[in-house]
Length: 491
Image (tube, rainbow, N blue to C red; front, side, top):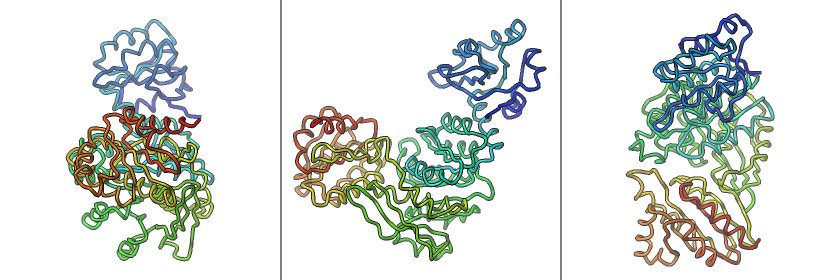
Protein backbone atom coordinates (compact mmCIF):
# COMPACT_ATOMS: atom_id res chain seq x y z
CA UNK A 1 0.00 0.00 0.00
CA UNK A 2 1.27 3.48 -0.86
CA UNK A 3 1.90 5.70 2.17
CA UNK A 4 3.05 9.30 1.89
CA UNK A 5 4.24 10.70 5.22
CA UNK A 6 3.94 14.41 6.14
CA UNK A 7 7.67 14.64 6.84
CA UNK A 8 8.48 13.02 3.48
CA UNK A 9 6.45 15.54 1.53
CA UNK A 10 7.92 18.41 3.51
CA UNK A 11 11.44 17.13 2.82
CA UNK A 12 10.87 16.49 -0.88
CA UNK A 13 9.36 19.93 -1.54
CA UNK A 14 11.28 22.02 1.00
CA UNK A 15 7.86 23.34 1.98
CA UNK A 16 6.52 24.69 5.29
CA UNK A 17 4.34 22.09 7.05
CA UNK A 18 1.53 23.35 9.32
CA UNK A 19 -0.77 20.99 11.25
CA UNK A 20 -3.32 20.96 14.02
CA UNK A 21 -2.07 19.76 17.39
CA UNK A 22 -3.99 16.52 16.93
CA UNK A 23 -2.36 15.71 13.62
CA UNK A 24 1.11 16.83 14.68
CA UNK A 25 0.97 14.38 17.59
CA UNK A 26 -0.18 11.50 15.36
CA UNK A 27 3.06 9.62 14.64
CA UNK A 28 1.25 7.21 12.29
CA UNK A 29 -0.35 9.87 10.11
CA UNK A 30 -0.01 9.32 6.36
CA UNK A 31 -1.77 10.09 3.05
CA UNK A 32 -2.72 7.29 0.64
CA UNK A 33 -2.09 9.20 -2.60
CA UNK A 34 -1.62 12.53 -4.34
CA UNK A 35 -4.33 14.27 -6.39
CA UNK A 36 -4.54 17.31 -8.64
CA UNK A 37 -8.25 16.91 -9.44
CA UNK A 38 -11.03 17.47 -6.89
CA UNK A 39 -13.48 15.61 -9.11
CA UNK A 40 -11.79 12.34 -8.18
CA UNK A 41 -10.16 13.15 -4.84
CA UNK A 42 -10.82 10.74 -1.97
CA UNK A 43 -10.50 10.93 1.80
CA UNK A 44 -7.08 11.84 3.23
CA UNK A 45 -5.40 12.38 -0.14
CA UNK A 46 -2.96 15.23 -0.71
CA UNK A 47 -4.44 17.89 -2.99
CA UNK A 48 -1.99 19.87 -5.12
CA UNK A 49 -3.69 22.78 -6.93
CA UNK A 50 -1.83 23.35 -10.18
CA UNK A 51 -1.75 26.69 -11.97
CA UNK A 52 -1.79 27.32 -15.70
CA UNK A 53 -2.21 30.21 -18.09
CA UNK A 54 -6.00 30.00 -17.87
CA UNK A 55 -6.71 28.16 -14.62
CA UNK A 56 -5.77 28.06 -10.95
CA UNK A 57 -6.43 24.96 -8.91
CA UNK A 58 -6.44 27.04 -5.73
CA UNK A 59 -10.04 27.94 -6.62
CA UNK A 60 -10.93 24.34 -5.74
CA UNK A 61 -9.29 24.18 -2.32
CA UNK A 62 -12.66 24.42 -0.60
CA UNK A 63 -13.96 21.49 -2.63
CA UNK A 64 -10.92 19.42 -1.64
CA UNK A 65 -11.52 20.35 2.02
CA UNK A 66 -15.17 19.29 1.83
CA UNK A 67 -14.18 15.97 0.28
CA UNK A 68 -11.85 15.16 3.16
CA UNK A 69 -8.40 15.93 1.78
CA UNK A 70 -5.64 15.07 4.25
CA UNK A 71 -3.27 17.79 3.08
CA UNK A 72 -3.63 20.96 1.02
CA UNK A 73 -0.55 22.21 -0.80
CA UNK A 74 -0.87 25.98 -1.14
CA UNK A 75 1.35 28.58 -2.79
CA UNK A 76 2.59 31.37 -0.52
CA UNK A 77 1.06 33.99 -2.83
CA UNK A 78 -2.38 32.33 -3.14
CA UNK A 79 -5.20 34.66 -2.00
CA UNK A 80 -6.90 31.64 -0.40
CA UNK A 81 -3.95 30.90 1.90
CA UNK A 82 -5.12 32.76 5.05
CA UNK A 83 -8.62 31.27 4.88
CA UNK A 84 -7.27 27.74 5.12
CA UNK A 85 -4.56 28.53 7.65
CA UNK A 86 -7.35 29.79 9.92
CA UNK A 87 -8.93 26.33 9.85
CA UNK A 88 -5.98 24.95 11.84
CA UNK A 89 -7.15 26.94 14.88
CA UNK A 90 -10.85 26.05 14.76
CA UNK A 91 -11.06 22.50 13.37
CA UNK A 92 -8.92 19.81 15.00
CA UNK A 93 -9.47 17.61 11.94
CA UNK A 94 -8.54 20.33 9.44
CA UNK A 95 -6.27 19.15 6.64
CA UNK A 96 -2.55 19.68 6.99
CA UNK A 97 -1.21 22.67 5.08
CA UNK A 98 2.03 22.67 3.09
CA UNK A 99 3.12 26.12 1.94
CA UNK A 100 5.37 26.19 -1.14
CA UNK A 101 6.70 28.72 -3.62
CA UNK A 102 5.29 26.93 -6.68
CA UNK A 103 2.67 24.16 -6.55
CA UNK A 104 3.63 22.85 -9.99
CA UNK A 105 7.24 22.41 -8.91
CA UNK A 106 6.05 20.88 -5.62
CA UNK A 107 4.00 18.29 -7.48
CA UNK A 108 7.01 17.29 -9.56
CA UNK A 109 9.26 17.25 -6.48
CA UNK A 110 6.87 14.89 -4.70
CA UNK A 111 6.94 12.58 -7.72
CA UNK A 112 10.73 12.78 -7.89
CA UNK A 113 11.03 12.04 -4.18
CA UNK A 114 8.72 9.06 -4.44
CA UNK A 115 10.64 7.80 -7.48
CA UNK A 116 13.77 7.67 -5.35
CA UNK A 117 12.16 5.36 -2.79
CA UNK A 118 10.70 3.02 -5.41
CA UNK A 119 12.61 -0.20 -6.02
CA UNK A 120 11.24 -0.44 -9.57
CA UNK A 121 13.49 -0.14 -12.59
CA UNK A 122 12.17 2.69 -14.76
CA UNK A 123 12.22 2.27 -18.53
CA UNK A 124 11.71 5.70 -20.11
CA UNK A 125 10.52 5.88 -23.71
CA UNK A 126 10.86 9.04 -25.76
CA UNK A 127 11.20 9.93 -29.45
CA UNK A 128 9.41 11.73 -32.25
CA UNK A 129 7.29 8.77 -33.27
CA UNK A 130 6.29 5.38 -31.88
CA UNK A 131 6.53 6.12 -28.14
CA UNK A 132 3.17 4.64 -27.19
CA UNK A 133 3.53 1.53 -29.33
CA UNK A 134 7.05 0.92 -27.99
CA UNK A 135 5.98 1.48 -24.39
CA UNK A 136 3.03 -0.89 -24.71
CA UNK A 137 5.12 -3.53 -26.49
CA UNK A 138 7.83 -3.51 -23.81
CA UNK A 139 5.20 -3.89 -21.11
CA UNK A 140 3.60 -6.76 -23.02
CA UNK A 141 6.96 -8.54 -23.25
CA UNK A 142 8.01 -8.21 -19.59
CA UNK A 143 4.82 -8.33 -17.54
CA UNK A 144 4.68 -12.14 -17.46
CA UNK A 145 8.13 -12.28 -15.83
CA UNK A 146 8.18 -9.32 -13.44
CA UNK A 147 5.61 -7.23 -11.64
CA UNK A 148 5.29 -4.39 -14.12
CA UNK A 149 3.26 -1.22 -14.64
CA UNK A 150 3.13 1.28 -17.50
CA UNK A 151 1.94 4.80 -18.21
CA UNK A 152 -1.81 4.93 -18.57
CA UNK A 153 -3.00 6.45 -21.84
CA UNK A 154 -0.78 9.42 -22.72
CA UNK A 155 0.37 10.35 -19.22
CA UNK A 156 3.71 11.52 -20.58
CA UNK A 157 4.00 15.24 -19.84
CA UNK A 158 4.80 17.37 -16.79
CA UNK A 159 1.47 16.48 -15.20
CA UNK A 160 1.00 12.96 -16.58
CA UNK A 161 4.44 11.54 -15.80
CA UNK A 162 4.33 12.52 -12.11
CA UNK A 163 0.84 11.02 -11.96
CA UNK A 164 2.21 7.78 -13.42
CA UNK A 165 5.04 7.63 -10.89
CA UNK A 166 2.88 8.57 -7.91
CA UNK A 167 0.36 5.83 -8.71
CA UNK A 168 3.05 3.12 -8.94
CA UNK A 169 2.73 0.32 -6.41
CA UNK A 170 5.76 0.15 -4.08
CA UNK A 171 6.12 -3.56 -4.91
CA UNK A 172 6.35 -2.95 -8.65
CA UNK A 173 9.59 -4.21 -10.18
CA UNK A 174 9.49 -2.37 -13.52
CA UNK A 175 7.73 0.79 -14.68
CA UNK A 176 7.54 1.54 -18.41
CA UNK A 177 6.94 5.27 -18.75
CA UNK A 178 6.53 7.60 -21.71
CA UNK A 179 8.41 10.89 -21.78
CA UNK A 180 6.73 13.27 -24.19
CA UNK A 181 7.24 16.91 -25.00
CA UNK A 182 5.69 19.95 -26.59
CA UNK A 183 8.19 22.60 -25.54
CA UNK A 184 11.95 22.92 -25.23
CA UNK A 185 13.40 21.57 -21.99
CA UNK A 186 10.51 19.27 -21.17
CA UNK A 187 12.36 15.98 -21.72
CA UNK A 188 15.18 17.07 -19.43
CA UNK A 189 12.65 17.90 -16.69
CA UNK A 190 10.87 14.55 -17.09
CA UNK A 191 14.19 12.70 -17.02
CA UNK A 192 15.12 14.27 -13.69
CA UNK A 193 11.70 13.37 -12.27
CA UNK A 194 11.74 9.74 -13.43
CA UNK A 195 15.49 8.96 -13.32
CA UNK A 196 15.30 6.15 -15.90
CA UNK A 197 17.45 3.05 -15.53
CA UNK A 198 16.93 2.38 -19.24
CA UNK A 199 16.05 5.10 -21.74
CA UNK A 200 14.85 4.59 -25.30
CA UNK A 201 14.94 7.12 -28.13
CA UNK A 202 12.72 5.74 -30.88
CA UNK A 203 13.94 8.30 -33.39
CA UNK A 204 14.45 11.99 -34.12
CA UNK A 205 11.88 13.22 -36.60
CA UNK A 206 10.47 16.66 -37.29
CA UNK A 207 7.37 16.33 -35.13
CA UNK A 208 6.95 19.49 -32.98
CA UNK A 209 9.36 21.42 -35.21
CA UNK A 210 6.86 24.26 -35.04
CA UNK A 211 7.75 24.68 -31.36
CA UNK A 212 11.37 23.48 -31.26
CA UNK A 213 12.85 24.76 -34.53
CA UNK A 214 15.52 22.81 -36.41
CA UNK A 215 16.23 19.07 -36.43
CA UNK A 216 19.34 19.89 -34.41
CA UNK A 217 17.12 21.44 -31.74
CA UNK A 218 14.86 18.38 -31.77
CA UNK A 219 17.89 16.09 -31.43
CA UNK A 220 19.17 18.06 -28.45
CA UNK A 221 15.76 17.77 -26.81
CA UNK A 222 15.55 14.01 -27.27
CA UNK A 223 19.07 13.23 -26.07
CA UNK A 224 18.49 15.32 -22.94
CA UNK A 225 16.72 12.21 -21.63
CA UNK A 226 20.16 11.09 -20.38
CA UNK A 227 20.47 14.10 -18.05
CA UNK A 228 18.49 12.51 -15.24
CA UNK A 229 19.58 8.91 -15.79
CA UNK A 230 21.54 6.92 -13.26
CA UNK A 231 25.27 6.65 -13.89
CA UNK A 232 24.97 2.93 -14.64
CA UNK A 233 21.99 3.45 -16.94
CA UNK A 234 21.55 2.11 -20.47
CA UNK A 235 20.50 4.10 -23.54
CA UNK A 236 18.77 2.26 -26.41
CA UNK A 237 18.89 4.07 -29.76
CA UNK A 238 17.33 3.74 -33.19
CA UNK A 239 20.36 2.78 -35.26
CA UNK A 240 18.56 3.64 -38.50
CA UNK A 241 18.44 7.29 -37.44
CA UNK A 242 21.47 9.10 -38.84
CA UNK A 243 21.09 12.00 -36.41
CA UNK A 244 21.35 9.71 -33.40
CA UNK A 245 24.26 7.73 -34.84
CA UNK A 246 26.18 10.89 -35.71
CA UNK A 247 25.54 12.26 -32.23
CA UNK A 248 27.10 9.16 -30.68
CA UNK A 249 30.13 9.39 -32.99
CA UNK A 250 30.55 13.11 -32.39
CA UNK A 251 29.89 13.35 -28.65
CA UNK A 252 30.96 9.89 -27.46
CA UNK A 253 28.50 9.96 -24.53
CA UNK A 254 29.68 8.37 -21.29
CA UNK A 255 26.49 6.36 -20.87
CA UNK A 256 26.34 2.78 -22.20
CA UNK A 257 24.33 2.58 -25.42
CA UNK A 258 22.92 -0.18 -27.62
CA UNK A 259 21.19 0.00 -31.00
CA UNK A 260 18.17 -1.49 -32.69
CA UNK A 261 18.18 -1.24 -36.45
CA UNK A 262 17.23 -2.78 -39.78
CA UNK A 263 19.37 -5.62 -41.07
CA UNK A 264 21.16 -3.47 -43.65
CA UNK A 265 22.73 -1.28 -40.95
CA UNK A 266 23.96 -4.00 -38.60
CA UNK A 267 27.44 -4.36 -40.07
CA UNK A 268 28.25 -0.68 -39.87
CA UNK A 269 27.04 -0.31 -36.27
CA UNK A 270 28.68 -3.42 -34.86
CA UNK A 271 32.02 -2.51 -36.42
CA UNK A 272 32.24 0.12 -33.66
CA UNK A 273 31.79 -2.62 -31.08
CA UNK A 274 28.23 -1.61 -30.29
CA UNK A 275 25.62 -4.17 -29.18
CA UNK A 276 22.91 -4.33 -31.87
CA UNK A 277 19.45 -5.90 -32.15
CA UNK A 278 17.88 -6.46 -35.58
CA UNK A 279 15.20 -8.40 -37.46
CA UNK A 280 15.69 -11.02 -40.20
CA UNK A 281 13.31 -12.88 -42.52
CA UNK A 282 10.52 -10.32 -42.18
CA UNK A 283 7.13 -11.41 -43.49
CA UNK A 284 4.00 -9.23 -43.52
CA UNK A 285 0.58 -10.12 -44.87
CA UNK A 286 -2.92 -8.78 -44.34
CA UNK A 287 -3.26 -10.34 -40.91
CA UNK A 288 0.18 -10.94 -39.40
CA UNK A 289 3.82 -9.95 -39.00
CA UNK A 290 6.64 -12.39 -38.37
CA UNK A 291 10.42 -12.18 -38.21
CA UNK A 292 13.45 -13.52 -36.39
CA UNK A 293 15.04 -11.33 -33.72
CA UNK A 294 18.84 -11.35 -33.52
CA UNK A 295 21.62 -9.67 -31.54
CA UNK A 296 25.40 -9.72 -31.70
CA UNK A 297 25.35 -10.02 -27.90
CA UNK A 298 24.34 -13.67 -28.36
CA UNK A 299 25.13 -14.50 -32.02
CA UNK A 300 23.88 -18.07 -31.83
CA UNK A 301 20.43 -17.26 -30.47
CA UNK A 302 17.27 -16.70 -32.53
CA UNK A 303 14.02 -15.24 -31.21
CA UNK A 304 11.00 -16.03 -33.41
CA UNK A 305 8.41 -13.26 -33.40
CA UNK A 306 4.88 -13.86 -34.66
CA UNK A 307 2.32 -11.09 -34.22
CA UNK A 308 -1.36 -11.29 -35.24
CA UNK A 309 -1.12 -7.73 -36.59
CA UNK A 310 0.52 -6.42 -39.77
CA UNK A 311 2.60 -3.28 -39.50
CA UNK A 312 6.26 -2.50 -40.11
CA UNK A 313 6.11 0.02 -37.25
CA UNK A 314 5.87 -2.91 -34.83
CA UNK A 315 9.33 -4.23 -35.73
CA UNK A 316 11.42 -1.59 -33.91
CA UNK A 317 8.99 -1.73 -30.98
CA UNK A 318 9.66 -5.47 -30.60
CA UNK A 319 13.41 -4.99 -31.00
CA UNK A 320 13.44 -2.36 -28.27
CA UNK A 321 11.47 -4.83 -26.17
CA UNK A 322 14.03 -7.58 -26.78
CA UNK A 323 16.86 -5.22 -25.83
CA UNK A 324 15.11 -4.24 -22.59
CA UNK A 325 14.44 -7.88 -21.74
CA UNK A 326 18.08 -8.78 -22.35
CA UNK A 327 19.31 -5.86 -20.25
CA UNK A 328 17.01 -6.89 -17.39
CA UNK A 329 18.28 -10.48 -17.53
CA UNK A 330 14.87 -11.98 -18.28
CA UNK A 331 14.01 -15.03 -20.39
CA UNK A 332 14.32 -14.00 -24.04
CA UNK A 333 12.27 -16.82 -25.56
CA UNK A 334 9.39 -16.22 -23.17
CA UNK A 335 9.50 -12.51 -23.95
CA UNK A 336 9.48 -13.19 -27.70
CA UNK A 337 6.45 -15.45 -27.28
CA UNK A 338 4.71 -12.83 -25.09
CA UNK A 339 4.88 -10.27 -27.90
CA UNK A 340 2.05 -12.18 -29.55
CA UNK A 341 -0.31 -10.85 -26.88
CA UNK A 342 0.18 -7.28 -28.11
CA UNK A 343 -3.09 -5.60 -29.09
CA UNK A 344 -3.33 -2.55 -31.35
CA UNK A 345 -5.47 0.23 -29.92
CA UNK A 346 -6.31 3.91 -30.11
CA UNK A 347 -6.46 4.26 -33.92
CA UNK A 348 -2.87 3.11 -34.42
CA UNK A 349 -3.09 0.94 -37.55
CA UNK A 350 -6.20 -0.80 -36.27
CA UNK A 351 -7.87 -3.05 -38.86
CA UNK A 352 -11.57 -2.93 -39.64
CA UNK A 353 -13.71 -4.56 -42.32
CA UNK A 354 -16.84 -3.50 -44.13
CA UNK A 355 -18.01 -6.25 -46.45
CA UNK A 356 -15.06 -7.04 -48.69
CA UNK A 357 -13.40 -3.69 -47.95
CA UNK A 358 -10.64 -3.58 -45.32
CA UNK A 359 -9.73 -0.34 -43.55
CA UNK A 360 -6.50 0.59 -41.76
CA UNK A 361 -7.38 3.16 -39.10
CA UNK A 362 -4.19 5.12 -38.42
CA UNK A 363 -5.85 8.34 -37.42
CA UNK A 364 -4.27 8.87 -34.00
CA UNK A 365 -1.44 11.00 -35.34
CA UNK A 366 0.76 11.55 -38.36
CA UNK A 367 4.35 12.47 -39.13
CA UNK A 368 6.58 11.91 -42.16
CA UNK A 369 8.06 8.81 -40.51
CA UNK A 370 4.75 7.26 -39.46
CA UNK A 371 3.16 8.06 -42.83
CA UNK A 372 5.94 6.22 -44.66
CA UNK A 373 5.53 3.25 -42.35
CA UNK A 374 1.75 3.19 -42.79
CA UNK A 375 2.04 3.37 -46.59
CA UNK A 376 4.61 0.58 -46.57
CA UNK A 377 2.32 -1.63 -44.49
CA UNK A 378 -0.71 -0.79 -46.64
CA UNK A 379 1.22 -1.56 -49.83
CA UNK A 380 2.21 -4.97 -48.51
CA UNK A 381 -1.36 -5.73 -47.43
CA UNK A 382 -2.85 -4.54 -50.72
CA UNK A 383 -1.19 -7.24 -52.80
CA UNK A 384 -3.80 -8.98 -54.96
CA UNK A 385 -6.54 -6.48 -54.12
CA UNK A 386 -8.50 -4.35 -56.56
CA UNK A 387 -7.10 -1.02 -55.33
CA UNK A 388 -5.28 0.75 -52.52
CA UNK A 389 -7.11 3.93 -51.53
CA UNK A 390 -5.40 6.47 -49.25
CA UNK A 391 -7.31 9.10 -47.29
CA UNK A 392 -4.60 11.45 -46.08
CA UNK A 393 -4.97 14.38 -43.70
CA UNK A 394 -2.43 17.05 -42.95
CA UNK A 395 0.60 16.57 -40.72
CA UNK A 396 0.62 19.32 -38.14
CA UNK A 397 3.25 21.13 -36.03
CA UNK A 398 6.01 20.63 -38.60
CA UNK A 399 6.86 24.33 -38.83
CA UNK A 400 9.40 25.16 -41.53
CA UNK A 401 9.46 21.53 -42.67
CA UNK A 402 5.76 21.28 -43.42
CA UNK A 403 5.77 22.06 -47.15
CA UNK A 404 8.67 19.76 -47.99
CA UNK A 405 7.33 16.95 -45.82
CA UNK A 406 3.96 17.00 -47.57
CA UNK A 407 5.52 17.17 -51.02
CA UNK A 408 7.84 14.27 -50.17
CA UNK A 409 4.79 12.25 -49.19
CA UNK A 410 3.58 12.32 -52.79
CA UNK A 411 6.60 10.25 -53.81
CA UNK A 412 5.70 7.78 -51.07
CA UNK A 413 2.26 7.34 -52.68
CA UNK A 414 3.95 6.21 -55.85
CA UNK A 415 6.33 3.85 -54.05
CA UNK A 416 3.41 2.26 -52.23
CA UNK A 417 1.46 1.86 -55.50
CA UNK A 418 -1.50 3.84 -54.21
CA UNK A 419 -4.35 3.95 -56.73
CA UNK A 420 -6.51 6.77 -55.38
CA UNK A 421 -5.75 9.59 -52.91
CA UNK A 422 -8.12 11.87 -50.99
CA UNK A 423 -6.43 14.88 -49.36
CA UNK A 424 -7.80 16.69 -46.30
CA UNK A 425 -6.70 19.81 -44.48
CA UNK A 426 -4.90 23.08 -45.09
CA UNK A 427 -1.44 21.48 -45.01
CA UNK A 428 -2.28 19.19 -47.94
CA UNK A 429 -3.04 22.00 -50.38
CA UNK A 430 0.57 21.88 -51.58
CA UNK A 431 0.10 18.18 -52.32
CA UNK A 432 -3.10 18.88 -54.24
CA UNK A 433 -1.44 21.53 -56.39
CA UNK A 434 1.61 19.38 -57.12
CA UNK A 435 -0.42 16.28 -57.98
CA UNK A 436 -2.73 18.15 -60.32
CA UNK A 437 0.25 19.54 -62.26
CA UNK A 438 1.98 16.18 -62.73
CA UNK A 439 0.25 13.66 -65.00
CA UNK A 440 1.98 10.81 -63.14
CA UNK A 441 0.06 11.73 -59.98
CA UNK A 442 -3.06 13.41 -61.37
CA UNK A 443 -4.62 10.03 -62.18
CA UNK A 444 -4.54 9.01 -58.51
CA UNK A 445 -5.81 12.36 -57.19
CA UNK A 446 -9.45 12.10 -56.06
CA UNK A 447 -10.03 15.45 -54.41
CA UNK A 448 -9.15 17.92 -51.67
CA UNK A 449 -11.37 18.76 -48.69
CA UNK A 450 -11.11 21.18 -45.80
CA UNK A 451 -12.45 18.67 -43.29
CA UNK A 452 -12.95 14.94 -43.03
CA UNK A 453 -16.72 15.35 -42.78
CA UNK A 454 -16.76 17.03 -46.21
CA UNK A 455 -14.89 14.09 -47.72
CA UNK A 456 -17.14 11.31 -46.38
CA UNK A 457 -19.72 11.23 -49.23
CA UNK A 458 -17.04 11.05 -51.95
CA UNK A 459 -14.98 8.45 -50.07
CA UNK A 460 -18.06 6.26 -49.64
CA UNK A 461 -18.84 6.54 -53.35
CA UNK A 462 -15.27 5.76 -54.39
CA UNK A 463 -14.53 2.78 -52.14
CA UNK A 464 -16.00 -0.57 -53.14
CA UNK A 465 -15.23 -4.15 -54.11
CA UNK A 466 -12.00 -5.54 -52.73
CA UNK A 467 -10.38 -2.20 -51.87
CA UNK A 468 -7.97 -1.63 -49.03
CA UNK A 469 -8.34 1.84 -47.47
CA UNK A 470 -5.64 3.58 -45.45
CA UNK A 471 -6.94 6.50 -43.36
CA UNK A 472 -4.04 8.51 -41.94
CA UNK A 473 -3.82 11.99 -40.40
CA UNK A 474 -2.96 14.05 -37.36
CA UNK A 475 -5.71 13.56 -34.79
CA UNK A 476 -6.69 17.24 -35.17
CA UNK A 477 -8.61 16.23 -38.31
CA UNK A 478 -10.66 13.48 -36.59
CA UNK A 479 -10.52 11.20 -39.62
CA UNK A 480 -11.70 8.34 -37.43
CA UNK A 481 -15.17 9.62 -38.46
CA UNK A 482 -14.37 8.47 -42.00
CA UNK A 483 -13.42 5.03 -40.67
CA UNK A 484 -16.71 4.87 -38.78
CA UNK A 485 -18.66 5.86 -41.89
CA UNK A 486 -16.96 3.14 -43.94
CA UNK A 487 -17.50 0.47 -41.28
CA UNK A 488 -21.15 1.37 -40.73
CA UNK A 489 -22.01 1.63 -44.41
CA UNK A 490 -22.78 -2.04 -44.78
CA UNK A 491 -23.81 -2.77 -41.20
